[in-house]
Length: 145
Image 1 (cartoon, rainbow, N blue to C red):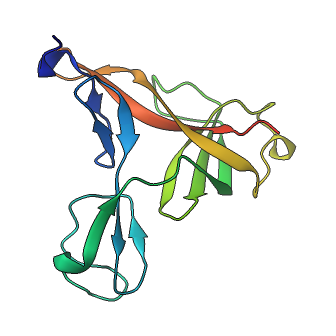
Image 2 (cartoon, one colour):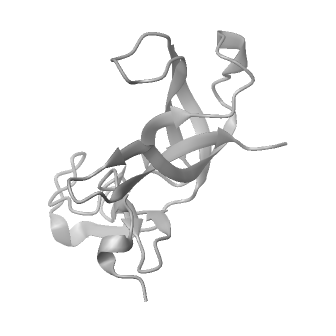
Image 3 (cartoon, helix red, strand yellow):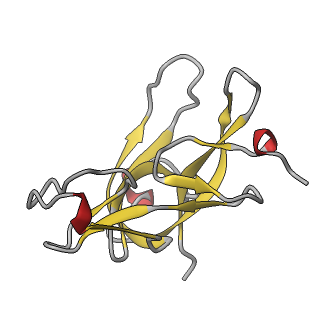
């Protein structure tokens, strides 16, 4: 049986890890106005001000549309460049920021806003917590036609 300490840790609060170590997304939706958030612990809607009772937790879609992207060519020491920093509108919400992988290259014509992408999960660049547990992060990859 896997103990909780053997499981990877979520790198972001909108990632959950089940008891078998499988990651997934979690989000909240305001039932008053329909706004969505990549979060599971909001106490109020930022758009309409509805309180916690109006927020429902849901599992968002793992596919969405690339809203914007930036090709990063300079980074902090230890961060491999180039990479594509992307903002993705998931189908049905919310909007997430993350790294887009699997592009043809790192030129503007290689990254098209409006393209379909999917969420995937992977190791968070080899990072570990003080107990040596690994982290799981989300990434985006183009959806094959």
